[in-house]
Image 1 (cartoon, rainbow, N blue to C red):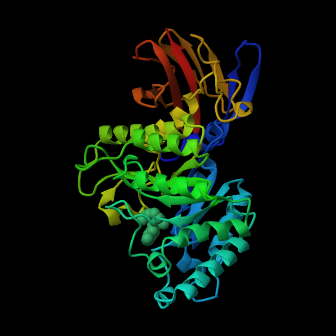
Image 2: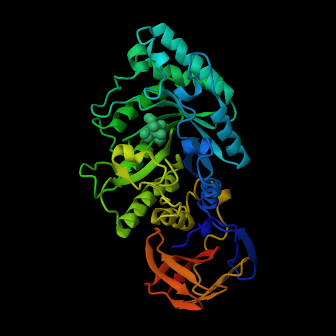
Image 3: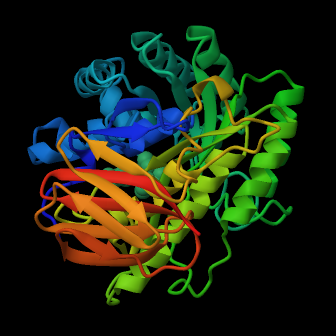
Length: 458
Ligand code: 9MR
């Protein structure tokens, strides 16, 4: 396996365009470049260790190369921003906002009103409704005010619904002290301070159906009420912390269920965002290559919702590498798209290839037709030559792929859903692609050089 992440490299590639007369140079494709072509946001948290310089340099390099939206794992939560009453601490949050601006990323703020990570001093007021209202309002006004115009969207309320019975979570200081109206108030206060920010309600287990017994069903009723009452809510964040389907015996969530929620929210003119995705395996089991490939397909199915549903624009993963992940605490493992050594996993490839191959239906032309890639259809010719600036090039004749500029290449072929269907190592001159007729994506990696392109085998 290659040690560095060549897709993220700076190699440039040239593509012969549709007529065969024009050639154009474009930066090598990354999740980020392809997300931008599809007019969506693909991101990952900045792990807490990043804030004190505790991560290797290639972590940040990967992060800024691959992602165009960011959120802090812990650094904008209540206990981080107001550790003692009326004394605010913005240093880490400022560091992230600066990083995001320097790298042209969208910023999520997470989270204003949540039952967890609330400092102890707040609990001193748990029986004083008027005081608690003042505490929450003051917190929101200061924190949202501090980053006004710099944070594009806020999780205003996080995890206010109970896990089991569809009802409000009872053990929240805000719920106990104020009542459910803390939610309505939090949205109104946030909007008053930063009217341009998108405001979300964020929660987990929303991929488990929208019937009245499921969390999402309960939430949907609340969103209807909020919208009817003019509460400024613009989005629902689906955290989407899910477990691999084969190890979760009680698995009841699915991408289809989440898609149904998106469609219902669209009727209310409210967006859905995937805000904390991870797809873990049970701790302790051996995870095989095919498990990782299946995991990649689940990542791809959730991505399809973002690509295909007009009111879904964000695909944010709760971590970069399995080495720095909260999942152990949930008795899960390996839920992210880079392994412990920061090498991309099959899930990374599935996402990359799906972003590469997605074409919006003709009648809708995607989320923003002006941003679509004009070269999107140029790969359907049977024989085509591609070259990149680092002198790697490929030429396809029937099923034989001729490669120039490679000394020891790895050739991988993916179907249009990002499933690996063929691979060969140590390729020098040419390789016979053992695949059926159809459309594919070929990726060639040779040292730090890489080239990825669509092919059609007829
Ligand atoms: O990843 C976060 C972890 O470092 C914290 O210890 C934990 C404390 O509650 O919060 C984790 O992030 C959570 C997020 O803020 C809200 N949704 C669930 C996330 C994973 O637990």
